[in-house]
Image 1 (tube, rainbow, N blue to C red):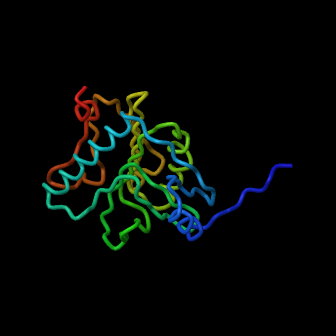
Image 2: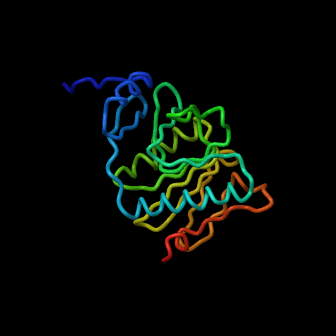
Length: 185
């Protein structure tokens, strides 16, 4: 007989996290350790953050772009640390976390890629995330899901293609990102 796994609440998880040096996420009440990211992972995250921050600032936007480690409390059973997130409702932010779904989340796959494609995809869609990108450095592809308009539809882009950011599609200047150019490849 297998031992029973403990179901943690967000309050229990946050209390434990205050005393831990290990990066972890709470997904459906279970705690998952996060591995140290690779160099390419960090390069992509840093450059995406810069491009998005620059776009928001240059267009006098009010959204905030954050990078991990920064907690997102989706609900009582789920606290995640997306690689990049854009939050347009300032009331969701406190000094330690985002309380509720960010508008846009980007996950750059690494050793935990299955979580990005399955559990997190469902969590983000259910929680109210408008747009979700899964950037896969090994395959040099990005999957874009725009839950706000097409919850079941996704687009697949290669790193050499311009990817339109759907949450900014109605702006005078739409943001597009080309991962290959971003990385200087």
